[in-house]
Length: 510
Ligand code: BES
Ligand code: ZN
Ligand code: MN
Image (cartoon, rainbow, N blue to C red; front, side):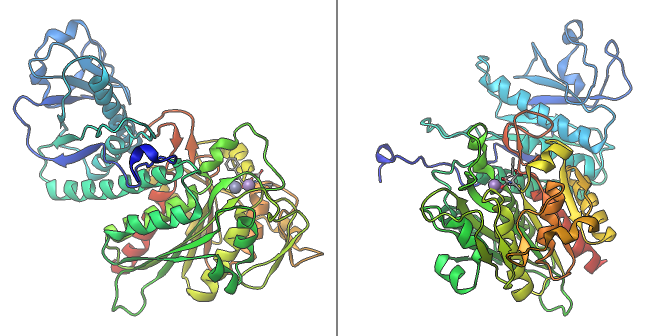
């Protein structure tokens, strides 16, 4: 169909690398960015290598402090442009913020009316930079300039190359760090693309087709899509109840990665993501203000889909299955109601109290299916599940529940090493009995603290297997620009999921 006849816009469905990052030698005449090293003063800044390219004329005008995220454009360069950027005390988070701020400044320079649009920028890095610093810097560069727009403007985005120039004896390690950063950054960007997609495009079937397309180029990653008929045969009562009110029927997306084949005891990690393509609240309808952001209520499913692609790209020697139950929570004559009783995959019945607590209905089925079919060694579910987690932890920290301290430490480490912040929440035994139902086996919305009550409900479906529940209702979206985050979907949790898989793979080989 010609574009002008389309009423539904076509939009990017793969991560757009607005910037390619490479390692290499300085290019003569290229625009250059130079580090303002810690320890100097505004009057006497300590500059990293490459500063000679700037001459001295700028010193009367610019007093860089070297603060994290500070970027100063150096005017009157002999070449096209120059930047001075700060990394504060050189912690991993400083490098991430610095990369993001630098790429945003480079992009702004392009759009400002300078007539000079440097497509190639060299960044001179200090010789003592270590792999995690470089990895965080690259993450910032790849994600800080992210933008999602649906527009009539068909102009191809400027493709830019940032070349990192570093004179290090450990270049091989830096190359590995760069590749890992590119995989992690692409996973975050894909998660953002999927979650940002408007819900008039993003039906469950669209999400399934897009997941299939995103996996197509990746060797060894397979995708199976199940429709509503299969879901009914298999007893997915929760998914069918939630999806029942929508004109767009639900799907189950299953992604499968079988790494490390041939070895007997390959651990099996199962990742489960909430895929509510739009959450009106259903019959227990939401207030209108803020409802539009519920197009991102499948951010958990998006993180799982992107993580599977990243895990396959890294060729990790473990087995990983991703499950994304996808449904639209809508209002109609066929919508489920408060007071309904729903039967899940494992036979457990739930008495519905609030149709807006739909995420746990999908997850209960997916957990039951994983237990029944997949023999998981570890299940991790991820969901924009409860507003109360936003109240508890704010918008930049994910809350998680884990069945053991060892698993909790694994999540904290995975988040720390990839730049995502988590806080452990308790599976309080004093509220466990509140989950028991009178009309049915369990109550959908037990009383008590909302995020914890939801987790205790989900635990009923885990068969006491090792399990982690990630509630990302807060950090999945942002209305501000900070660090590598820009307004809209943040892609939160994709890197943590990949990192958890990496940690399991490491234990195997090490
Ligand atoms: N998708 C929402 C949770 C949410 C709220 C995510 C705000 C992001 C921002 C979820 O489906 C929901 O509506 N949860 C209810 C549960 C309640 C009815 C027990 C909530 O948290 O209010
Ligand atoms: Zn929801
Ligand atoms: Mn809801």
